[in-house]
Length: 109
Image (cartoon, rainbow, N blue to C red; front, side, top):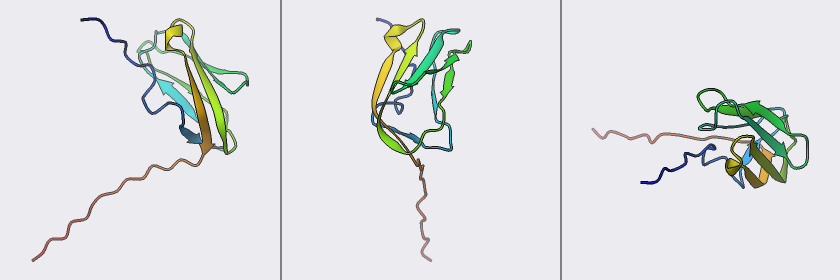
């Protein structure tokens, strides 16, 4: 069958996401990119941040801390694979919480 391209961004790095606000640095990361290529991430119209893809195809770009805000767009560009380029819209910076828990079962005697 035909080859299927493996994604270079995890599915949760997408439009309508919330990234951690300042003072933390937000990280945009992925895998399956071409080793040695440059990945650049641009927030709105600011100067982009960039990183070089490792030999195993993994990469991460650390953004400067951003104040709590909404309505941003992120342009993610790959120097050797422009077909992987993405523009994410409606990106927000705020407090990000990951909650998990467990159910407690009572044993009746």
